[in-house]
Length: 305
Image (cartoon, rainbow, N blue to C red; front, side, top):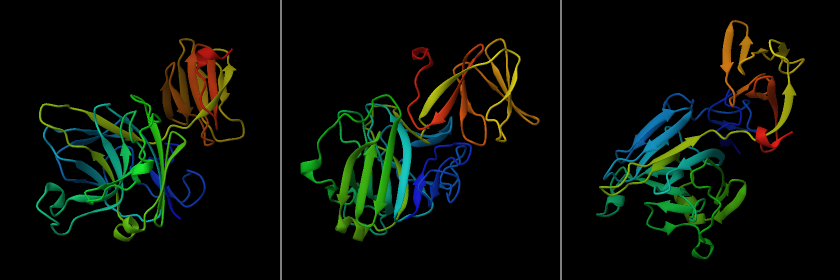
């Protein structure tokens, strides 16, 4: 089974596909390069899509029907990971194994040639149905059975939320912020959509509403922070024995990361991946640095002694 994800370490890939058990560079195929929309196709509607701060941002267009930004490649069995943030008033979703209608199936707007259709994993504010599976323009409505379609509050309104989607044969599993939401086996949906593109939806809005936005980005790694107290004007190596850059700690609470002729300035409160090990350094103030080890949630600097 191939795995698709917005990778944990942005320096390696922006969005990718892997064969192994972890989001690493090896075996991954890029879906989003973090800078452009190369490899993506706009379909239906007139919503705006742009890249901003390493995320894909969709913005509603007044009076537009549902809009989609889809991969130009198709995928069957996969694992997809991403983070998403959405305005509370907007509804969205991620299409999986989807396509466009090659012939009209009726007289309505969802029946037209070219209409995006297929399974969609729901994105919406709490309390709501985020993480359940809908049949976009399939005529079936929710693919999640009615008895399981229970509103919940796992989606963190106004914040980034992490999704994980695993599609294997007729089975679709979803997680939201680490919590399992749906485990759906739907033979009919799989027969109709065994493979297709991945799509980012901006839902249509009525005239006089909006504009609203939804953004997708690579997952931010969770870290346990270790405090390092360093004298000012001291060169240190981020990870001894590894090819990391040298670090100059400045008196005004700034760090200059240097690797050969390359240089990056790190301001208080910012973080940067400091070495090939993927461990970032996070500057909190003059003379004080946190080195982060992946694995657990970051603890705010103000809460540690």
